[in-house]
Each structure stands twice: as C-alpha cells, then as structure tokens.
Length: 279
Image (cartoon, rainbow, N blue to C red; front, side, top):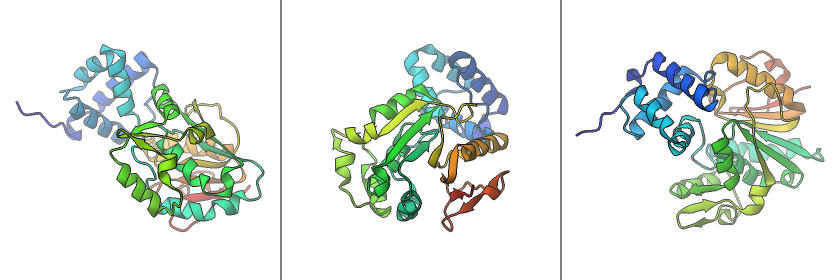
C-alpha cells in the first residue's frame, strides 16, 4: 500500500489546538505562543515521518509510552540540526566581537531556546578563537528537559559533518575543528572542555523570571516561530536582560525596528541583525 503524504492543508486549526492542549495537559509543555503556521508545518512533518493518518492517531502514539512522547516532543520543538548555520553572519560577528567585548573584565553570554545545544556549541567555538572566550561565562537555556539533556551530552550524528566543516571554513574558522568536534563511529562528541564551558539549564523564554544580566544574547531564528504578542514580550525581556552597550543577535529574517523599545538599540552591522543597546 502506498504511503499517504499529508499536506499542511489537511491539518486544521482545530487539530493544532487539540494537540497542543494534549501536550500541555499531559506533559506540561506550552506551545500556545507559537505561530499556527509553525505548528502546522511541524505537525505535517511528524505525521508523515511516523506514517500517522491524523491527529487522533498522533495523540494515541504520543501517549503510548515515554519513548514515543520524547520523540514527538523533540520533533515538535524547533531546534538546530546543523553546526555553523549562516556562516555569513558568523563571519561578520567574528570580525567585531573583540571590539565590543574588549573593555569587559567578564563577558556574560545567554543563548535562550538553545534546543539540542548545536547553536550554543557553534557560538562557543566562534568565541574560542577570540580574546573574549577566556573571560566569558556562557549560559544556554531551553524549556524542554529532553533537549537540555541532549545538549549537556553533546553527542550528535555526523551525517552532516562535511556541511558543518564547510560552514565553519566559510565563517572564517581557523582552528582544527576535529579537536573541538571529534568524529568517531559516525558520531560527533563535543570536546569535554567545550562542554564544560557552557552551563545548560531549563528556562522558558516566556517565564517571568530572567537568568540574570548579560553582555551578549544570541536569539537567532527563533523569534519568527512565535505569535506577534509573544514576540513583543520576548524582545522586551531580552532588552531588560542586556547591560548598557550589550549586544543582541537575531536571525536573518528577524528585526527589532518594528517593535516597542527598538529606539533604544542601534544596528552594528549593515544587512545583519546585530544590535547594540544604547543605554
């Protein structure tokens, strides 16, 4: 029998509401603040991946056991699958990081919604090549317990290794990458000292609590997945967490200019979403 391919048109808003309500009631995960377009795309991918016909089958599959639940929640959560994604941005950041961190005795860095840790390790490696690394304290957070544990372990499949390495070179990387991301038996295991440099912990970007004040915040390619009211709340929180002259990095398709409070930031790099807080 041919496998049926499910399209986004097949998934209704009622399907989305039903599933995210199930996740909230059963596993205490809140996906209500994600955009409907994002959730619909994720559901389409999951239904096709596990050959499920509809949302009822997905709910039954997810609730069947812990392993299924972890798989579905992992797939449903936006996360990175590739090291050094967007090498053009990384090259521009690399050129300037020492300029705005040089006066600081301690550099506090936050990577919210870090997912499986790939983005956090990417920035740690970029910083490793700069003077900023020695005096930096890197905190990476996510609301998903499963992803936090994966990030702490620092173990990833190596099927994209050639792409990862090319991205690293294109970003201006000069180190021997295999020492920081050694590959063995088709597995990447992040260097132990690099893993110890990052403090991974559970935290929701929408929580009222904040993990402290920071000089650098990397929140790239995550803002676009939230509904507009949540975007405003998130950007206000990130602004509050930044020290004066602190730097906020957003994704290529994200901008600060149309949001309340944007007048307190200036763009540091033309065509890149790197902003500095003025006061």
